[in-house]
Length: 156
Image (cartoon, rainbow, N blue to C red):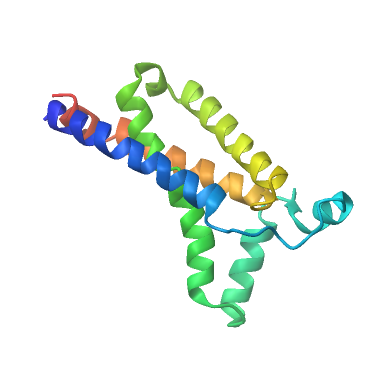
């Protein structure tokens, strides 16, 4: 079983990485319409450092009926699931990522760098809620892989 899964991992990992890069950096071919020279404006409109502000806004607008459900699902569930596969790939490929503190530190660093890069290249915003959702999804993936019979099954 492990050999079959290893082949699946090595075939699907590059596909996942390319899809992740596309979603994070190339899906939108435009920034937020803010001139590059207006850094203060970009900070004002393309950052959120208040935890759960964006999540709360999406949920409030959803319950009010003032936003399309698909927008909420894409933003909230999409961000939650985006890094979920890392919880499967990393501990399977590298034993050191079977330890939660090491895995969590590296995933947090990667997600933080992604958020900063999206802001710098103007292909997204720098939002603590994106970090929270991405990190939560990555941890859920790790928990499912390492704390369920799945790991034992795939290592046999």
